[in-house]
Amino acid sequence: MMPHANRSSGRLSTSLASLLTDLSAVVGATNVLTKSSQQQSYTQGAIASITDAVAAVVIPDSLVALWRVINLCAAVDVIIIAQAANTGLTGGSTPYGEYDRAVVVISMQRLGGVHLLNDAAELVALPAASLQQLECKLAPLGREPHSVLGSSCVGASVIGGICNSSGGMLVQRGPAYTEMSLFAKRNAMGEFELINHLGIDLGAAPEEMLGNLQAGTFNKNPDSANSKSCTNHHYQHKVRDCEADTPARFNNDPNGLYEASGSAGKVIVFAVRVATFAKPTQEQTFYISTNDADTLTTLRQQWLKSELNLPILAEYMHQDYNDITMRYGRDTCLSMRKLPASKIGALYRLQAKIGYYLDKWRLPQTLPDRMLQIASTFMPPSLPNSLAEQACSYRYHLIIKVADGNNTDDDNRNGNNSGSHGHIAAAQAFLQSHMQQHQGVVHLCTAAESQALLVFRSAATAAMFRYHNLNHTRFGELLSTDIALPRNAVDWNEVLPINLQKQVSKTFYLGHFFCHVMHQDYLLHPEVDAKKFKNELLAFYDRRRIEYPAEHNVVMSIPQNLHYILFIKN
Ligand SMILES: Cc1cc2nc3c(=O)[nH]c(=O)nc-3n(C[C@H](O)[C@H](O)[C@H](O)COP(=O)(O)OP(=O)(O)OC[C@H]3O[C@@H](n4cnc5c(N)ncnc54)[C@H](O)[C@@H]3O)c2cc1C
Image (tube, rainbow, N blue to C red; front, top):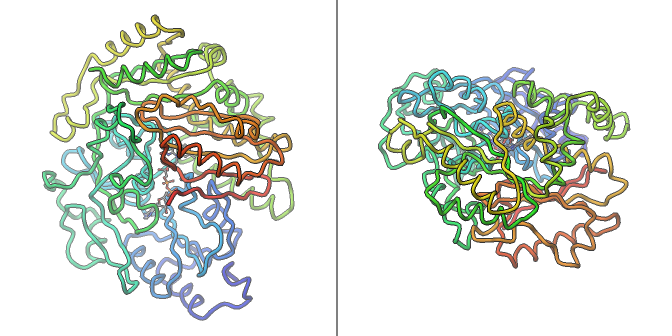
């Protein structure tokens, strides 16, 4: 059993060999994966793993075992990569590139568990607890987790979301955030210290605390009136301020970084304490389409300045994105509509395994996409006919979802769970009046249409990747950016300067419109120097006071050789 990390040297270092033995003693030999065929679904994420340094993937089954594993790793100074559901698009939960030391990936997948607190107004989530599990657990209690959209459908964990500041679609709640967590961080001596900021007494010694935490032997009605927060209370006010010349949120924003929140692998998180939210009694999705970008600019400004309650989400898609999601997203839409999140996670792992064998047998990496694309022609369309015509007939589209009966952030903080009503009717009146005065249409979705539309939006990026993958001979590289516009920006409908336009074959735009966070994809002409283009593009962004990355870190993919470049502004 020869671990990757040592193939290059051809010799297993003594400390690494004894680390593997010690890890096996803690978690069992079958949970220390050292062969690349076993590791594939843990080392492969959205960003292809390009490393030879993974000594082992370790899968502990208790918090105490996790604590022992990280201490063993720290003692020999290996690099630790924490991984939850591995759906993050940033590459943070998988190895990438060159490392100066061996890498141990720790999968949290067997560390599930949720403890409800204070009559389910809050909860403690352990590392593998997923948003979808929370949704099922909270629904009978009339509550829901921070997010029931987007990455929830693919099995994302609560802690992965906190670490990644996830939750891009959520206009009212903003990115996942808490100041209450239990985490381990390395001190100046390189040793791990366990820090309990859950606001719950768990005991004194680390293993005692972790044992109590996992077993739920602690006070389930802890004081919630301390100065720490377990949700983002300020986001609504920030989003509303659409005259501000700074973005509502972006990765480097120090206001969103607090211990576990935004830590993205820099500490090991054992548990987070987060708020839950009253489940809406009624929801309504509006589908708004126009050929006039200013119609959407004024819609956003007027809504944000009005007395209207903030929508749950307000997602933008350009017609070109609609078009490729119709053509290349059928199977993704179908799987998201029909499969539970846990099964979709399993599909991702299967895909990673297939990729491994294609590579091993020197078969084209496009093979699965080609087969799925052919199969998808026999599947139902990505959107029902009632929406498809509108999606194809206009250039600019907004999906706005509004709720009655869900409490606001302030209600939540003040313990007022009575909810609020009349928001749907007010939003409908506003939208219909706005679209009558301007050019365009507003469609009131049925519940089924609403689900189809949100799945369609979530499947768009995957469809775009497939489009590029299957057409890579026609295009050069694909550059994907994730940017936060100043809240007062009106140039969201980007017009590239001529020097950039000349290098681009196609552009695709979508985004979190009210938050002014956009995901932009540039398909370059063949032969264009992608690095040079990227620098010119960033200079263009800088002139517009755009911050990047807004919520994900990936900017560039070159699927032909599966090489990706991370995009992090220092
Ligand atoms: C189809 C699709 C749709 C998506 N939609 C959205 C969306 O709408 N909004 C959005 O924001 N994101 C979205 N994402 C991105 C992603 O799903 C989220 O970022 C998600 O929150 C990541 O959760 P995870 O459990 O997969 O975490 P992982 O990807 O496993 O990890 C994320 C980060 O957290 C760290 N981490 C995880 N667990 C621990 C731990 N216990 N201790 C320390 N560090 C840890 C990892 O090292 C990594 O840096 C989407 C992804 C896909 C594939």
